[in-house]
Each structure stands twice: as structure tokens, then as C-alpha cells.
Length: 53
Image 1 (spheres, rainbow, N blue to C red):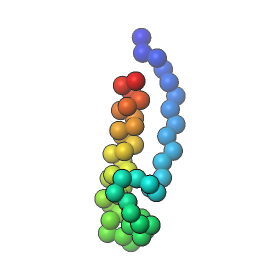
Image 2: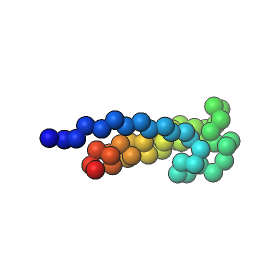
Image 3: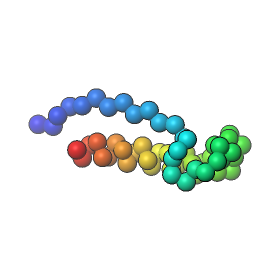
């Protein structure tokens, strides 16, 4: 039987892969969609890692 765990992930955009400037995270930045996709991929990777452990 799989062990049940509770998981809380807190995530913000500073420090994610590919972000080099605060300007990229502004609401009017053309890079914001790309950064959000990267953030989603990183959080999903963390979740997959927890599920495999």
C-alpha cells in the first residue's frame, strides 16, 4: 500500500531557470509567458519526483 503524504509547495518566480532580470517578470514583459511555462515545468518536476520517492 502506498504511503500517504501531505505536500506543500511554495513557489515564486525569482531564481527559476532562465530568468536573468526582474524586468522579465513584469506584467508587461514579453518574456512573462515563457517564464510562467518554465515555472510550471519546474513545479511539475518536483511533484513527479515526490511521487516517485
